[in-house]
Image (cartoon, rainbow, N blue to C red; front, side, top):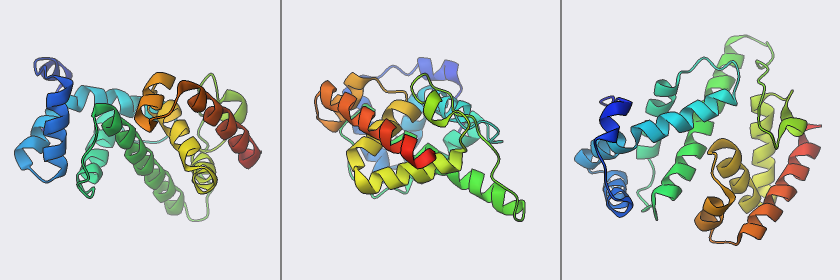
Length: 196
């Protein structure tokens, strides 16, 4: 996968509709589109990776490595078209979280019985819930939430991990902003109980 630097990405201005078309061609297996979408969206993927890594504490991945690993996983997706760029970044965020969890678990397995490395999660909203919690425990709590309330789990992923606004989340989930706020409150309460 060729690496695009952030300055070259800025030179590739494309309309959001055009990016969605290129993105869907890439997900359908078109090699040229895969490289083109990677170049067009690399800087945004790196920003998303930095956000994930900031929330995962001592994980020894760098943003570029996380982007590369996540992008390779994203390309193995079933090819179902993405509605738009917002849907792509919500999906990218989920895949990055999965890569981080796999990395954390592999590191813990290597320690032969050692405990998971503590990871501090920082956010103004979840500080009281998970400031001292381990990244792997948060993932397990999110999985439990997904079994109870799939949409609320997606709200957490999009808001906490992808840094999406309530308006963006509402648009992606095709619900109202008050519904997103309600799901966020329910998710916080559920995660608090799971992480206590």
